Image (cartoon, rainbow, N blue to C red; front, side, top):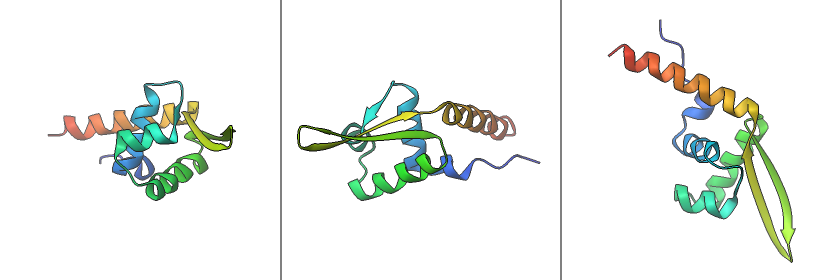
Length: 95
């Protein structure tokens, strides 16, 4: 029996966010928005879900008077992605 893919990561936008964050130390909200073509509202909701799960850390600050949201993947997020990829491989090997 195949193990279930992590539903939190399996969402297209959340998977894109996690994949992007694996390749950088940190990314700001605008970078993630540009790379994923997500709306601000949808991106914000998905970042909150990943943050609540402990997969990413979100830092909110100000640069001058402009708000800045920066995200980075946590070790728990790296572990979850590694497990997701391994589970996906079992699906692909079953073909």
